[in-house]
Amino acid sequence: MEQYIIKGGSPLKGEVEIGGAKNAALAILAAAIMTDETVLIDNLPDVNDINVMLDAIAGIGAAVQRLDRHTVKINGAGIGDFSIDYDYIKKIRASYYLLGALLGKYNRAEVALPGGCNIGSRPIDQHLKGFRALGAEVDIEHGKIVADAEVLAGTHIYFDVVSVGATINVMMAAAMAEGRTIMENVAKEPHVVDVANFLNSMGANIKGAGTDVIKIRGVKSLHKSEYSIIPDQIEAGTFMFAAAATQGDVTVLNVIPKHLEATVSKLTDIGCIVEEYDDSVRVIANKRLRSTQVKTLPYPGYPTDMQPQIGVTLALSKGTSTITESIFENRFKYLDELARMGATIKVEGNSATIEGVERLSGARVSAPDLRAGAALCIAGLAADGITIVDDIVYIQRGYERFEEKLKGIGGVIERVSSEKDIQKFKLKVS
Image 1 (cartoon, rainbow, N blue to C red):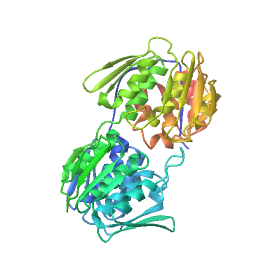
Image 2: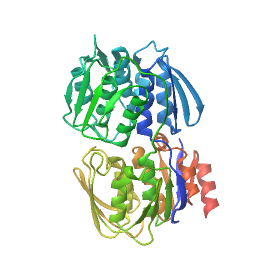
Image 3: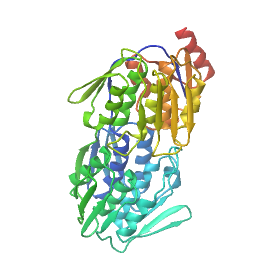
Image 4: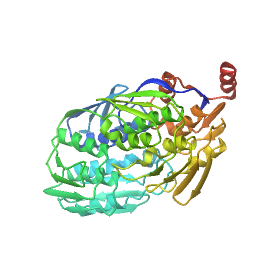
């Protein structure tokens, strides 16, 4: 089993380039099968989740041609199977986007109930509500969601809760439904907008993505397209907080600063200097940072996927901070690991109180999920001594060349797979 071993205590400095948005890419890959013509997608992140999704798409008969690490051609004309195996779903929850894509194109889909990171309950009732509203019969049989429709017809849907997954999934199905669909109380995240823009590039008629109301006029067929994925705001934010926690000076390149407003606001609150340019952001932390209050909210609020990264930074900041997690109930699992490194934290329900300490000390910790794993690496980079992070398969699901990018800005980090490698690293850095 691979691990990261880290020697902390050095400020991160330099430039790091951000890749394509994983969460946008997963949905866009699913949407790409909705035409029988060839679609070219670039700026794909080369991470495990993307590779699993491409395997799932190929597994139902679509032609998948990987041109290079970041570019793929997909042609959905050969799809002959509308059933997505549990093997794919247990690895990545986003395989459920194939439900909306297949239902929209073929009026039928079967997808195993989803897996993914264990960060809490993520019900799919809003997805099913949307599909039923469009006229599909939806049942759960033998661990699979089975959706079937004589015809999908446009309708008015009000979502009970804001859900990114449901917004995207139902939007895909509605793109090829007959007539007009109005979706209210929808998610406004940048990757929702990116998926809508991609569908529109294939000939869909979707208006209002990025607002509370999306209006869709169904079309009979979609056509070929060439499309580039937006930059990953969560990868960008992770490196921005890595700069903050290590008292560094890092410029993140290839970003859309508008997508980072909530992250920038909190970095400024705790005392960082943040400089914004057209497609890059520089974060400078030249003194010990201060405490703040954080509450995770749907976009444009502070993202739940950035909660562990700010948690680590606040553990080293002066004063008492509180974090309220309003999206996922299991998102605080990393705090037990952080406490092993000397953080002072008290968790009550969905709220954590963090008393900042002067320094963390290296320890052996385990990544409980994707974002928490990245945050624990940041803690290791800021800590005194050596930190070993286990279960890094979570991190590799969503961050491309993570240790290489950290090394590029001065991080002392290696990926290892044996006790011998660990000893070799310790000798090298001692």
